[in-house]
Image (cartoon, rainbow, N blue to C red; front, side, top):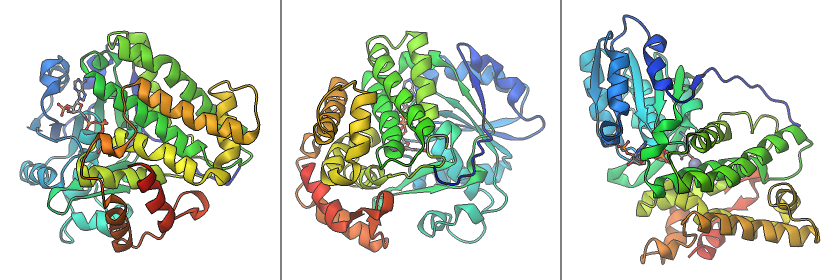
Length: 388
Ligand code: NZQ
Ligand code: ZN
């Protein structure tokens, strides 16, 4: 196991009915921004519950954060927050609303030019005077409710860039499994696939003498395999929904990556597919991940074989055979959720994608990805072309 520092400051308030706890966790005497998305919270009762928690507080609202949140929209919220002297942000939504809140938290008091530069120059950690934020999660998927990352898109340039800074950990996050009931099946499938791939990004590298980390990862994968289909079948199953929700949060809150190598190349390439074609984040991961594992098979096969044994219960065969089976089982799992794993299933315009992805990486001076930088640009090209 490698050396690590681990601290996660986000308070989790979990359980059926936990949105009712909101008021007691909100700061007193601070002007609050209530941030949300396209309005699903107004149809499923979450908005009313949140308003009841806010009734003794001074607040303003900003709605309309879209999936793959756009810089252009977020900056309108930043303007409002500056005008209203907002001191605390309450994000009510999925990863997109929460990520938007994190960018706003940095941008509101930013006075060194265009806040987009924070993303381009990777300076999030240097930003001082960050507005604190908290969340009411409505879609288990990204783990944004308990991590310090955010991914923001810019419509005018078709870019999708990420950042992370300790100052962006939510102060608290409310995880109430009853919110899952109203999530459309395609978004539940996305959430399971995203959480599943987050674990794989931190697990499918090479043996690193970290059996506890491996077992954390394997248990989240197994739980998602068991509970995911139950949630797909009946999103009102609060027990399964709660387990799915907790898996998604634990999959990307810093615990799994402590002391082990991580990959994240599937995400880096996947973000470009969303930026280019607007494909849902999780679906880009299902397109890329299996081919990435095929492309760097030798480097990953030991962990792939372990994954086959521990998660898919493959009992016999050589390391190579088990590893190959693990990739097939993963693809079958995505298919079982209704997630297609070929780029051509999402766009007819896929010719030339590999060249475009390479051009974008070169422009940003990205030379290699993955653990030990095993994925150079030639490999990226190969992986994208295998995914057509
Ligand atoms: O806009 P609203 O009305 O909220 O509707 C949303 C949206 O249309 C809807 N929805 C959410 N909760 C619902 C619901 N509909 C009915 N009932 C509910 N309870 O679902 C749609 C998708 O929401 P979105 O927030 O976009 O989904 P998700 O949570 O999958 O977030 C995706 C974004 O997160 C980024 C992705 O790149 C993408 O931009 N990621 C963020 C990460 C992080 N911060 O750590 C890591 C991830 O790897 C990912 O990159
Ligand atoms: Zn993801």
